[in-house]
Length: 83
Ligand SMILES: [Zn+2]
Image (cartoon, rainbow, N blue to C red; front, side):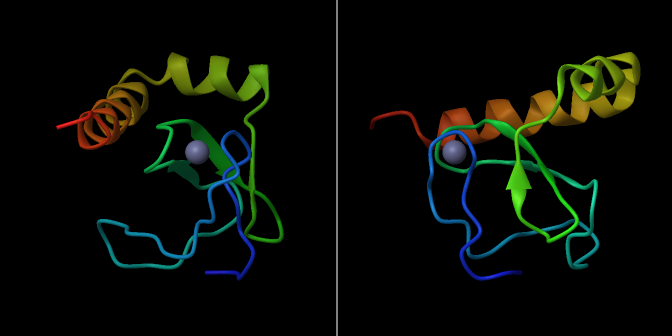
């Protein structure tokens, strides 16, 4: 994980990650921010950028991928609910 990686939506510092297979992120991988639940994409420098509208359309066209993305967004939203 690169130092200085930030969420492109809320600017939160992203200094760790988790992956179901415990591998390092690579270009094109997706990330859901733990702070604002926004969906981002890892660029060629393993920094996060906002997805393009074409990428969003592509993600939505893959029903299984979109369901998985939404489950992460819901999970992070629930974590961030005030107690
Ligand atoms: Zn964020």
